[in-house]
Image 1: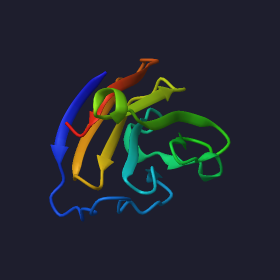
Image 2 (image 1 turned 135 degrees about the horizontal axis):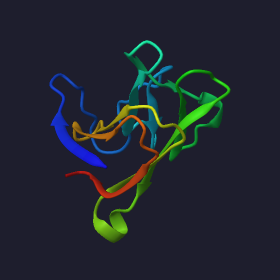
Image 3 (image 1 turned 180 degrees about the vertical axis):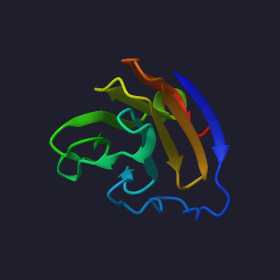
Image 4 (image 1 turned 45 degrees about the vertical axis):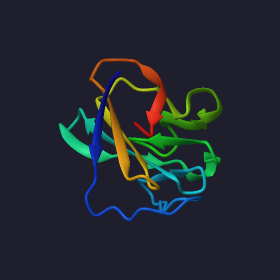
Amino acid sequence: MKAVSIELPGVALAQEGGGTCEASADRLCLHDGRFSVEVEFTDPNVNERKDGQVVSSLTTKETGFFWFFSASNVELAAKVLDGRALTGKYWFLYGGLSDVEYTITLTDTVTGESVTYENEAGSLCGGIDTGALPR
């Protein structure tokens, strides 16, 4: 797992409480809009980067899923847990159900902080980051 912190200029930040995430076909919003999760993957058939699509029927407050090639085939699970009582941070967990190359971007819309997680082609992995955000 490779994590990289970045800041996104121009991202509207929320005040205390919920966040400003707006759910879409390719953006998963968790914890009442506080966190945005987006996934890009490389389609090995055409060697192009594409956006993962949210499986909206399976989304909960803390967990969501993405598909890459077919809406009936879940490729990635993502979850944000509130671990602040233990570590002072939110935790990010993900599990890949595919060996394609993908990049996950997790954004805290309250602080504007983002972190990315990368999976190389051919790798079957997931990850747990108990210090995801804030950094």
